[in-house]
Figure 1 (cartoon, helix red, strand yellow):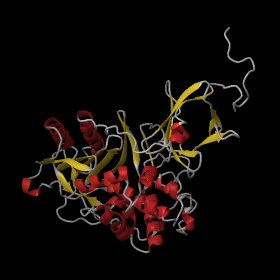
Figure 2 (figure 1 turned 90 degrees about the vertical axis):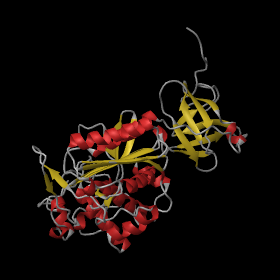
Figure 3 (figure 1 turned 90 degrees about the horizontal axis):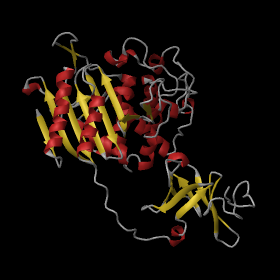
Figure 4 (figure 1 turned 30 degrees about the horizontal axis):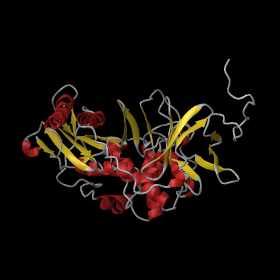
Length: 459
């Protein structure tokens, strides 16, 4: 058993260790590793093992991470988009011809909404050599379309094989080499690789009715590698999780990783607990939204979640085909830290400079009889909120003279405009055709439909 901590209270550290100890014991797995990152720093790692200490993998050991690999592949695709080499709405055929599913868009492949099959044709691709599937038709198979593109979420491993081949075509190098150069090296993920590097955990199957082990094969997945090939450590995955929360201009900026974290597909039928972005799973854990991914391959299970609002990420890794569920365990590790040691708010500080022109816009505005408050934000943008009850509120960023673009909420992407009178004074705000005036139904102002001449009255 090992444990490393920084800045967490003893009770929090004990609760984290207890959680992974329960996962290892009740899940009947040879080993279980967990780690937590807070505000960009690894604050705790721990491991539990049922093996001899000499054979026990430590927290620096690589585990296979399965489908967490897909998020790495999605980052490579988003880089191509940001460089202008493709658009997410492009059909695959435009850049990777001859696949027979070329009408599916790149965004649909990223979001598992392309309608493709979940798995490659037999034999079971995760447990057999990739050399058995030497070409894309061998991966996609006949009857690859299960659903109309864009209609629903249907998880597709072959879809990420296509994305990996797309990266190779546009980069002129292997998926593995592109990943190393463009993501792993810039982010300092030196213990993440396509092939295992010592020390690494061996994968096991645990007998369902006896305390017996069976070694699992660790196959090179070939063309299917972009869907699940990678090996990594808790520390590397925590650093990657922070990148998914904050971005890194050397790889992808904050706006692009935020786009990856945004729901891009309907929830699976009957499942309203989560959805999928662009290469990222999105789920709810209590009142928290978590983003990340889970993964599995024979002999290994993995989970990575980050709560962006709390600034906490967690990873859980194990070397068994079935048993403990690292996804829920990682979510609970996030919750343990966030609940026991809530994030301290940044201290309020006065603005360095205030735009008096914008300051004059602040205060109450009325959409009909709905009272809204408009205020300046610390980053120089605007925030529009309903003053009573829940409602349609958004943050806005400057988008030219007298115009702002919505960043989130109901008005994401919509334009807020300041409309002036002929004398230059502000008449009203226009937000997607909604008119906001300084007084409710202000006579003589630009109220759609006009204002009754009799004005406000009693009964």
